[in-house]
View (cartoon, one colour):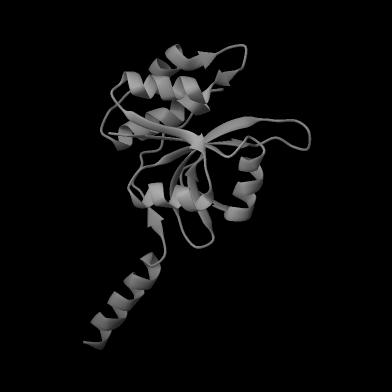
Length: 162
């Protein structure tokens, strides 16, 4: 009986305070962080649209990327509802609690050089977010680091849902 109690206690403590959605990871192709992020979220909802197909519609060669409004329009064209807005950490947690992955636009640049990049926020704990970076899945980013990268580009998020 003691063993069962400790196993239950251990399992409770491991998951306590952490929310992690089962969002499929899509490894991005060159300059396709937006299409890969959208493809990943579509897969979460059971719809398989390859990043290449999304990229044909949203990729802008002059920008070497995609506008978040174009990602939103593509999602709407596939029957999804969307929320595109400036946000905050607590609101992102609410979306995750509602089982809605969040696409965030962050800046991976250095000093004065900006490098916009989309990530999919798939979970959180009391210390930070778990994101699919486009290169790796479930990368942990402390809240302070996330805020610095996110603030540079206006704290913008895109949430798509059915």
